[in-house]
Amino acid sequence: MKYSALILDMDGTIVDSLDAVEGALKKAGEKWGIAVTPKLLDIALYSSGDDLGRAVNLSGGDEKIFLADVARAYHEMAHLSKLFPGIRGLLEAKISLGIVTNENRTELRHNFKRLEIDESVFGGICCAGDTPFIKPHPYPLQYCMGQMGAARESTLFVGDGRADFLAAKAAGVSFGVALWGVRDVSLFEGAQHFFEKPGEVLRFAQVLGFRL
Image (cartoon, rainbow, N blue to C red):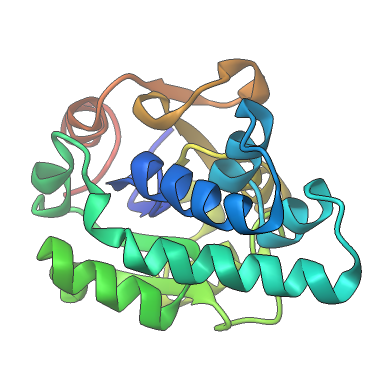
């Protein structure tokens, strides 16, 4: 397989946000009397806000307030997030890069600034709010590929969440599992590639596939 475009997820792939997400859940959970179980943390890390809202089993109005509390606490704890080791080298490589995230544009740019990531390295970016859908719907990936001028058969999407995997499958795009951010590898049966570290993605790009 020859690839010419690499698209990355943000949280759990580029950024180690475990401490910030767990801290935000605990702070909001204390207010609402909701225990932060491993299952709830996994949903917060790897699924959508809608999934998290359903998991806490609150009424519609309270669910939205709880999610807003989590988001507010996450912003307060964003300083706990950090780049995964090896990601900087991948972002600085001469590779056609894109990013697809369920963060909104304001959140993404805040993280870019704090983590000193140059937005211009990405030929395509799709955030929550840029399209009517978020992952696992395929359209955010398709939107990003459109910006990059990339065909689905020559695109590799690397992420750490089930929603990432399902989005890639629905879009007909090859998927690489970012094992450095994964807690349950069984969720990715059928993925084309498995990468232990970000450096493996870069070596793969340089040696096996990508046209640099």
